[in-house]
Length: 375
Image (cartoon, rainbow, N blue to C red):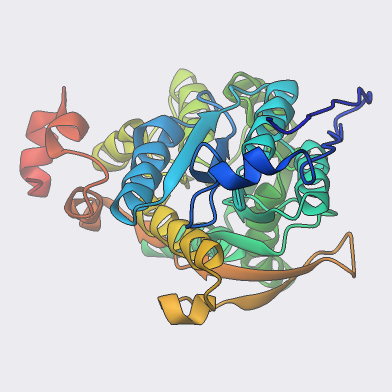
């Protein structure tokens, strides 16, 4: 017999799926389970990625990297994408839990729906790893990501350094925060940037004239939000802390219309092709590179250790306590990786890491790449 799976329809983002009779549904199901602890289908780990629109990384990098890591370890994995649909996210989780996975790796669309899935998994005895984004108020015991507060620090400090190098005194700064309304990572980026900028503002060395949020991380919201902030700032801006490369591109588009492209230091994140091209052409100052290979490798190693019942330390993983500000009882152990600053001087690092090919970055700007020595 297959386990009986029952859905309970609950309105709101934090829909909770009830999974009943996962045990005691007949001996035939248990007899068919693999000796390695998997389900009758052999699936031991489920992975749910959030979408294909907020970033191209999930299908291009995360999915194949995770798949290869599990294949190499002889672990059968079920890797799916929720396509930005919270109901589909919950349904995928229900299906994977019903399959009998021992570990669930989730990169949630938002914290509320992610926390709902975590509760269901926890009730079914499935260990959950928050991947890339932590679900505040959830129950997952593990979190694998980059040091996202450090990302914001690097963005702000590199912008300040570049403004100083250009001889700009008392610069006017506009902050273009990412989806702080849906993503705790965006909150951490913002927090990190403020730890650098606020003391400088207090010392009279710069001025944060405006701060806007690109709601939902939706790039179509970025240009209007920046235009409004720039107008409120009297059209004066020397540096923009843009949370990622897509926002940076929208900012540069507005500045280009005003004849200011290349005259304002703009930050970014993700080290995508468009962002790197702007850096090489001088219209974006920097981006933050988070090598997805490192993140996928760490998450896979942790999942494999949990499946085998091993101490994560035995897999070479160092976990640290991570506080959930929304729940004192949420005891998270986190593995936080170090992000890297990319400027015109080290774009080659992204190529050397295997994240992008020089031919793709240099398409249409070959002479610029030749001058920069990219290969």
